[in-house]
Length: 96
Image 1 (spheres, rainbow, N blue to C red):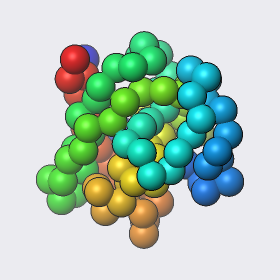
Image 2 (image 1 turned 30 degrees about the vertical axis):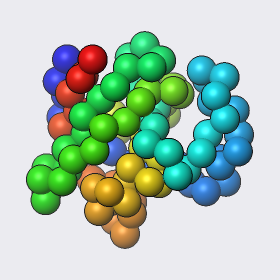
Image 3 (image 1 turned 135 degrees about the horizontal axis):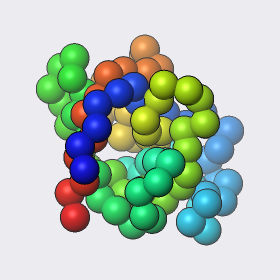
């Protein structure tokens, strides 16, 4: 599966809260939320503005904001240089 769209990242207030998979959300880990991919799926996320990429594990559901395809942990967003803008255009590809 490959998709292109907007990515955002979790606000710090979710750090330590339980995700839909039952895991505890840690903003320092490379995880993400997707509406339908199975929990545990590894996804390669590429920032289409700068070519930077990161691998994340799906462990939550979302995003719940229209026109966004993935919600990233802060660590993943930082790796992609998305933190300052808050959102960015990305390509996501299932890796495993």
